[in-house]
Image (cartoon, rainbow, N blue to C red; front, side, top):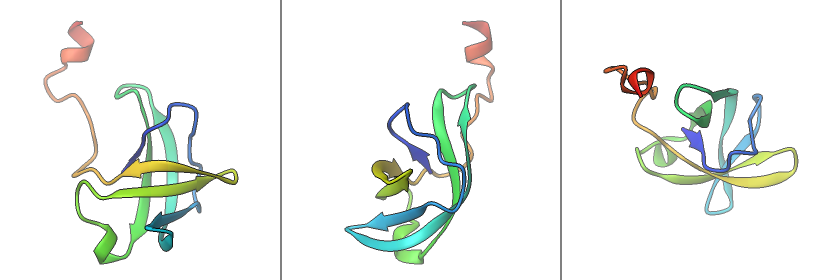
Amino acid sequence: MYNIPEDADPWGNEPLYLDGEMVGRATSGVYGHTVGRSLALAYLRPEAAAVGTGLTIDILGARRPARVIPESPHDPENERLRA
């Protein structure tokens, strides 16, 4: 999963919501410098874990948009390194 805003980095234990209902918690989070996004790992209920699901995450009292992604993002072809 990743956060959309660039000014919000989860640390862990933040609640995640789907349509206003809590459906999970982040276990850890960090800004991914190589992918240019804030990332988080989370435990989610099955109905909220489908790839592409839009969620909100509560970071320091503010709800931020987040989206479930299929796997850990990376640059397997090293295209960013060559840029």
